Length: 525
Ligand code: SF4
Image 1 (cartoon, rainbow, N blue to C red):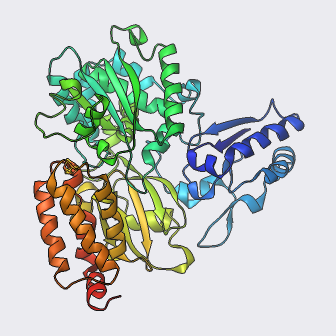
Image 2: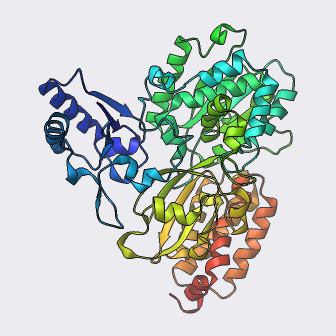
Image 3: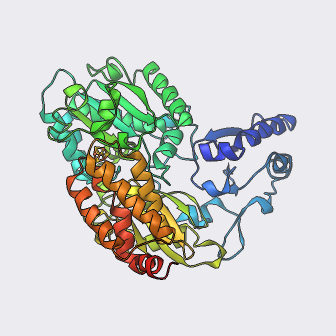
């Protein structure tokens, strides 16, 4: 038997390490060491129910475990083959226990391609990763494919950048490949800073080799020799596991000089960011690695021509890179077989807020938001009604309940006034004040503005002052027009994406919930 105990940051915080220690003790006590293997995995995904564990091959899922449950699990389940019902998942809709892991709607309705190894492998074991087709994509890319063929496969997959902008990845790589240089770089953006987003952290914690393999394939495609993973220092577990993975890959000849005995050499280093949101912007991120203050600079030149240390560079998000090896193994056509016309493959979301099943979700592009919130998310707690969903974090917008049938697709989501973003989905029920929600995101952006350009630095400050007085019941009739005027100025004159999208949350609330603004101003609600 395998006991897959979740060892993501969320489950660590709720005590999974204590449960794991108790499991070791009990298994030893019962002399089961030869027949039971405890595997500490990365994030299992169902974060709301931690500490959690899946028993294989029995297909049993245990939730909210404590140390005190362990003796009973070992004696009753592992020795007497009687799984413990009270620790099984209870469906919030039917109120019934769901005995089998694979029957739980939260898992059954997902398509784990990017997250294919989550909850199954020990992220600190390269052998576990290799046992799940790990490094086959790299082997194929290095020994059987020309760099141009790698790029063609990426183009055929149709994958677009999962960091939010949605630029076609294969095309991005082809630009960098065309530029000759003595040095080129591959960067991984792991500076996940959106409130409510934890997709990249979970991927790095659960499957770090997938990201390293993706970066190495990218390096081969553009002929780069050095790579950096820019990871925020608030992610210590992710950093630890990535460093272990780097060391293991180097030791096995999968990173460093003459990879797999070829003449191709590439190495990866971790650069820890200090938590500035603006460092997720590509030019600011590169300046930060260069040791300068993390501030955006104008483009062009684009990074594919002059990026890190003015050398051709590609920057991809964690989720994008985690898909690359599978695209090499199965082909671009396989990847593009899922999704909509212009948005291919799957998308990982961090589902949080007023929803029953908080956690990590991966669905095919084309899935409706309603299905994510109700079928996978289990609906809204306490029988309240759904009011809206915030998609795309502080750069995105809110989508009201009436548009919940919109599907996950870059263009379709833009039509209802939001953006796909990196994947944070914050669900809000009918008691949420949307004006206050807009104020929250604006406050975040205002604090994170690097201050380089006046419209962003001062404009967001003025907008925030207005929103604060509206929230406090001192709004003036001209305030809405003032916010809109400032939004136009900031959007059109800000240097980087942070400023250009700073007004999105407040504008989307004005678009969909203008009556709430007016009620605050005129009825002092
Ligand atoms: Fe800095 Fe804002 Fe200007 Fe971006 S738009 S460079 S965050 S001041």
